[in-house]
Amino acid sequence: MPTSVRSRHVPAGLALTLLAIGGCRAAESSGVPAGYADLVALFQEWRRFQAPDVVDGVPDYSREAMAEQYAALPEWRARLDAMDTGGWSVPQQVDWQLVRAEMNGLDFDQRVRRPWERDPAFYANVYAAQSDVPAHEGPTIEGFIDLWTYPVPLSEADADELAGRIGAIPRLLQQARLNLTGDARDLWLAGDRSFAEQTAALSAFGDRVAGAHPTLDEAVGQAIEATAAFREWLAAQAPSKRGPSGVGKENYTWYARNVHLVPYSWGEQVTLMRRELARAHASLRLEEHRNRDLPKLERIQTAEEYDRRLNEAVDDYMRFLREEDIHTVRAWMDPALRAQNGSFTPAAPNEIRNFFNEVNYRDPLVMRTHAHHWIELARMREDPHASPIRSAPPIYNIYDARSEGFATSVEEMMMHAGLFDDRPRSRELVWIMLAQRAARALSGLYLHGNEFTMEQAVENAGRWTPRGWLPEGDLVRFEQHLYLRQPGYGTSYLTGKIQIEQLMAEVALERGDAFTVKGFFDDFFDVGVIPVALVRWELTGNRDPILVGPGGDVP
Image (cartoon, rainbow, N blue to C red; front, side):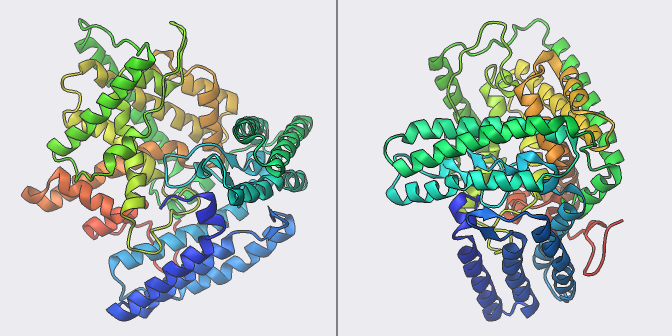
């Protein structure tokens, strides 16, 4: 299920313990090889180990603590590699690969990324809204605070808990000043944005709960002051930061193949993104030519029109999924999607909104496809995977190409399946979104290859996004900062999409006349939100070369 503050950081150990015990008991009673039960137990221990110790409410990311953690990693890998997986089922071996990928993620963090040392934004730990993926996008510090999980008005218990956790922010930021010794210039400069967002989130939340809980009011005020002081410290240190922020091409390739289990190298991803960018632009021009005599799509103008059209879009999309047999439709899917409709934001006639709002305000049905994210999150909640290892989202954003790739792939897939047959101008929006994803992905790749600075990445993404809908502003900078912090995230929308398209082709070839779109998607969902290479192994029995066995490694 999706993680939250309380499910991950307080009851998480208990929850995983129960999952591990349940998995072991099920293994013992069903004849499952005892080795798999050992894997489940190891996974539960591993999740506790990879989280740093918490001292006085603050996770310890000091040089000494991180060195001690890294020194212990070989023992964990040895325990995993020592397991004899030869007699295990494919799903059980898939779970082994997931645990291995997480261990590789910690290894990469320790060797290369070192966010506690190089990335100021790592210490911004307050989130006002839920992400549309199984966990947060990008690296998160232990003990992050998801304000959206606390219903307002707050109970006394929640207020006390938040007072303690928010009250630890000044101590956390004091530790950050000691830990942040890295020289990654673009990461350093972009960090200010994350703390500006933290200030806004704390201020808005403080206003909502003001006066009801004096201790919490004081904690929020002190956290806002500490955050402002930390921003001043970042600015004062900035002139001394001159080093590269990207992980480099070879490291990027290793991370993709060993952690996110994406088979493409840095160079191969550049080629794929260039191809998708060219395809999107060419297809857009042809769609525009075909539609040249049709009226252009006008933006939604009023709150009343917005509410009506967003709800109609959900109706239309759910009807299409059901009537066209795209996949099995459950009762909880409609409300999960409808809950994310949002609300109308006025804009001047020539004002460019957030890129995705420029799409959404012209035809909300187009964005309902990508909002399939929320159906997936509801599935994880309503119908969690039976595997105790897959029922918790993978750490290190290992899910990104599967989650973002699927949400992106269904935009074009549903178009080809007929969703926009009676809305030809809306087809243009699908190609515009694909072009934007490819443009920003290339910028992120060049950032990590240390061929672009942040400013060059921002300019490139904006220049190659059609119609000027990605001007230099908040969204493009947020995206490039995220992709720099989390290698592979920027390309995941399209590397995942490409893998899913390849998988559909492979499954269709194997099943022949028995292939159906509904059967493919239902089977695809049943595997869980895990890397597509692992989904492929379960659906076809074909194991990708990047999926090495115990003791192996990927070149």
